[in-house]
Length: 187
Image 1 (spheres, one colour):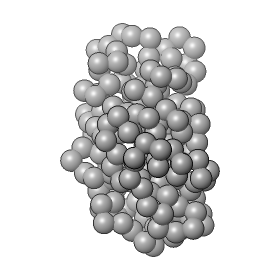
Image 2 (cartoon, rainbow, N blue to C red):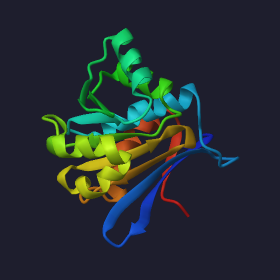
Image 3 (tube, rainbow, N blue to C red):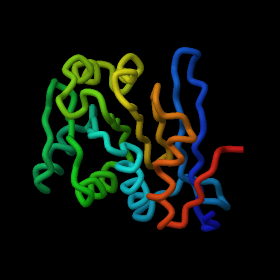
């Protein structure tokens, strides 16, 4: 067990009777404040593909699209815009993912894995354009998971019919051990 300065708490969330969700919180052990900055970016960049496992994943942006578009174009990161206010980045390379997470940690964005993530999901992408990440509420059952990412707040909400907190811990713990992050259930 890591005993470093950082803790990742992973536990069930009670959003509603009909919604299965887990929270992932990355905090400093002593202050219990969200971990931010370059180290946090590296940890989240290791966590994303570990959480997806063998599933293909995408990142979904629905605000500040011009900045996201320009960033991706300048770095050769593939993306498409399936609707007016939705930009989808199909599974970026590790170094691209880290750059994206570092640049847009202050934005709320989404992540989808499995299901139609590879082929595209026009109904969901149209809903993202209109409702933002609230669109995941009706769609997450079609995926291994959908997640709402608020990295500057040290937080990720995972909506899934398939991933319980114990499975999330099993997937992400090896990826964050190198950062001396203790992965625990909340007390």
